[in-house]
Each structure stands twice: as C-alpha cells, then as structure tokens.
Image 1 (tube, rainbow, N blue to C red):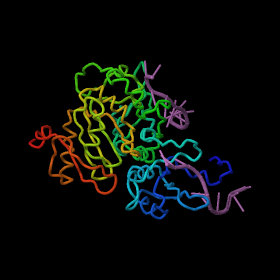
Image 2 (cartoon, rainbow, N blue to C red; image 1 turned 60 degrees about the vertical axis):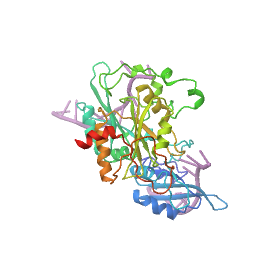
Image 3 (cartoon, rainbow, N blue to C red; image 1 turned 135 degrees about the vertical axis):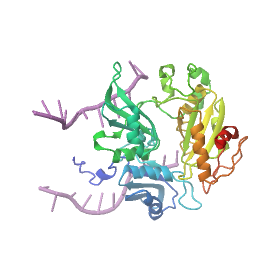
Image 4 (cartoon, rainbow, N blue to C red; image 1 turned 135 degrees about the horizontal axis):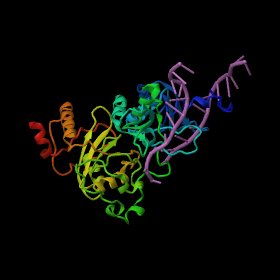
Length: 373
DNA sequence: CGACGGGACGC
DNA sequence: CGACGGGACGC
C-alpha cells in the first residue's frame, strides 16, 4: 500500500473504499446524534462530521457520513434522499460525496454509480452475465465487448443496474474472478442533463430525431445508427415508446403526467408507489418512439421537484405491458388497494413530507382481461 | 511443465 | 442554493 503523503495522515481512509461517504444537506438544527439515529440502519458508520462555522460553531447545514462500505452509503442515499429527519424541517438531500481531493462539487450522478465493468469467460452470453449478476439487484442490461468483425467475445462486459446500491453490492460480493469495478462513464464530455429551453424550444422533437422504420415487433431493438447519438447518453439500450420513471421522492399522478405531457404524444402515465421503499415508479407511454426518446433525453436526470433527480429509462420488456400490469395488479393486492382509478388525472397536492397515500392509476380496459384470466 | 493476469464501450 | 475537522504518526 502506498503512503498517502504525510500531509494529512488521516485523509487516506476518508474515501476508502470509494463512494463510501455520503454528503448531506440538512437543516442547520440537526445534530450529529439525530443524523446518527437515522443513518445507522444502513450500515457501519465510521464517522459523522457536521460542518460548523469555525467561529460561531453553528452548523452550516452540511454533514458527511462515512460508512464502511459503498453499498451502505448508496443505500443511505437511495432511502434517505428527500426525507425529513424530524418534524418541521425541510427534506434533506443525500448524495455520494465527492472524494476529498476533488475540487468539483458537482453531484456524483447515478449514471456513474450503476454500471460495472467485469471480466467474464468468453463463453458467456449476455443472458449468462445477467443470470450471474441479477442476485445483486435489478439488471437493466448487460453488454459484452466483442470483436467487431468476428463477433467473438473479448471476455469483458458491462452490467447496468437500476440502483447504485445494486452495483456496489455486486462489486463487493461477486466472485473475485470477475474483477468487478465501476465502469467509467462512456461520454465524459456529454451531459445527460436536460438541455435548457433556449436551445430546445426552437426545435421540434421530429426535427431533432429521426423516427426509425416500423419494427416487426413493438419493442424490438433498433439500429442506433439511425439516431443522433448525442440524444442518448446510455446507448446499448433497447429503445421503446414506453419509459419507466424512478423517483426517490414519492410523486403523484398529475404532477408527473403534466411533466411528461410537455412532450407531445403522451399516451398514458401510470404511477405506482413502491410499498417497500420511498421510491415511486411510473410507466409512461408515448405514441411514437421519437417522443419517448425525446422525453428521456429531456427528463432523465431532471430535478422534479428541485433536488429530486428523476431516473428515466426505456421499458423494453418485449411485451405488450401485460407482465407489468400483472405485477401492478399483484402489488395492488399486497398493498390492499381495492380501487382502480381510471379517467383524467386525479388532483392531489404534492406532498414532499409526511405520509403519501398509495395511489395507482391504471386503465381498466387493460386490466380487465387480466383479472378475468 | 501448463495457465497467470489482464481491463473499456462502432463517434 | 450545499463540500471538507479531529488527531497524532512504529522505521
């Protein structure tokens, strides 16, 4: 092991292992004790540091929590971001902290935390890779690096997970022979933030993107060369006219509908509160692929409400939505939701704090055949 | 003899 | 908007 300089003897372990520290923006009234109380359940806290004014000793509303493992820090971020530590305080923000040496205070994006790079036997197919890694969390996709001419595997693969904690769990716990590490983001230069209104308002989605030829099957993979690559920070995805939206903060139907309705061609927007976490999941469908790609480009990473980054990915389950709706139906039973709402958006106040009622909005026309089956 | 260690995405 | 203390080092 290398000695870390000697100027700061204790600095070496602050970010070891990488991404094991969270950066908190909290109320200035929160103490180290209240933070410890709320964050201890996610793992072994090694250090808590509430940043205070050097002279007045008042909290600056900033704190760092160091965990033993990256997966613990990621879980703390996923579970605590947007929550309130106590009554009458604002929702807190939780991010993976930048490493101490970093001068940038830009947020560490989920983009950089959810994809791993692994070494695999050359005989593995993408499905094999997925089977090996799905035990750590929902795998969004796998891709194997292949010889471009012969198509033979180079024994290297990427695995994209849904959540940062899944990727961290895989890295920490998978067989050492995979040599799993976090993948470097592909387009370091390109931003996946939504572009500003000035640059986008002058161009229509149809002008920006080319509609691909009609596919034989609704959600089959398209040739990416047809697209403006810059429109999609993550390629190697199966595009589709349906999108999944993940939000750390529970959202309600009409806010999300109105947001995605900004892009022309919205067909429906169904939201579902995850009973087992603070997440909200939603399915958004557009009339055509162009609208969906444009919506993903614009809204993936968009802060809504401010401070809560939406995760937007293509939903290409290869089906017509039946499987998803079955899942929703079973979740409705589990959640003891006995009503299915159909119709225009139901008005409901956005409630960043406090309990949010479980709310599912599904077309009866689609669900009816399922219930009778 | 016989298999360690290596490692990056069609822009 | 919201980013970096404390403590003492084993040859």
